[in-house]
Image 1: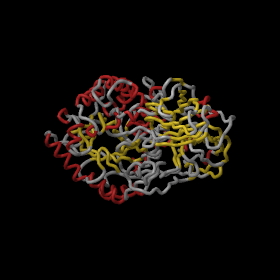
Image 2: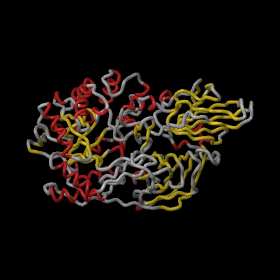
Image 3: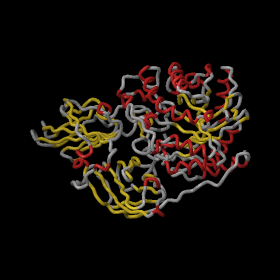
Image 4: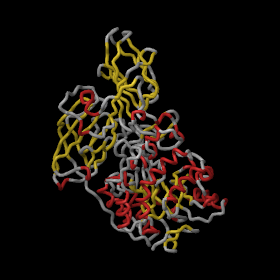
Length: 597
């Protein structure tokens, strides 16, 4: 039996072992492409794959678990093992990862608890989750004939809290359920985060996260180890080889040769996990959100990350730069030629059907009535859009309407005519609407949850509860008797395209086309001439788009397409669309001015 140990170095079968790892998130890559990405990791000469585990995907509703399809973690680990790759698994409750709410399930917001703390209610929720998750991982530990080297207890906790009882509780939940591999934490490499986020005096292994200045950051970690009389190997658990992107901001890039040299600087002293090796895609509503002052800055659907493999999983210039460096300095790690997938184009796919949201609303959601408007979470809704509807009479020729405390983006329609759009900092400002005194009007307010923050103190902020959180005023008083339509859009097949379409409305657009088996490759949906919304391929939600850039396309993995008839549905909220769509063989970008925040 092969055994992995941590002494003053990593030991595999009692022999020194340098970990060359790359991050591939199974939940961001279509299962048909897991082998492709893992093979390319092995082909680089690396020996380990690292992945987070997103709690919110595996337990989308309290007590309902999913480990199928794209969430079949066991199959992903088996493919890695078949390729002779070891695994580092990070099943901590919080993952950050630029993922919606840092991987925490949104239903926690409806519970009376303090997340990421020793609060017994939170520990109980994690315990129930681990009861479902860990039995799937225990057989895959190295000790049990699998390929898992070690597991993470918490993720960058020193950048959030210092609740040592919480860290002990999570560690104990893992140990008590049969985890026998070494456990670790990962934090920023400076003293404050290491002191707050680790259990070093209890022999819980400590790793650091950084993307440059290896000498300086490892020196800081070594000093911390020496303070606590530890002689541990050095490992950068997240060496950031690129970065994520946000709407309205320029694409972030890093020079390939500079990266390769920076990776070499890490390997001179320790082990590495490249974050990311293959970034993949924030499918569905799973993009994360950055917190900046009073506003939140949602991230784009693509998680390309400027990584060694691009969004589709093909090698980039960074891959070949690191390949060259490994071959020059570490020839003992054998390399192979990487795999490259093809992509295809299909131009001018005509519009088949279209229907306004207001016309098919009742097909997608049952109305919920309440005196005051409710938040998403109060309605049992975690993601998507929420439409609020009311009938009201005008008391002035220029009526004033205000949405008080709403998140994240609001569109106001009066008699189904678009009046105003507000986003975070504008929500709450007066909206003046012309009308006839005593006349009745319908008011519809479409709120979009654009993603919860994935890092920092705002995880606890009330702003992470979405929808309208206080009320809607006409003149100076709150209006009563609201209907709510929860638009999770998880069943696009229910859209009734036989109903009417009206210009300027949020609407659904369907495009049908046929494919032959030989053309079932990856492609990209060109959304240059659409405004804002989401898209579905054969009823699978592939993510958000927005014409503000920097991305103007959505990646479609070949595994979502099929021989014969295919359908793409686009939900567009701005009244901007085209009578045909284009599938293109590479992503489309919009040049965005401004600094990278």
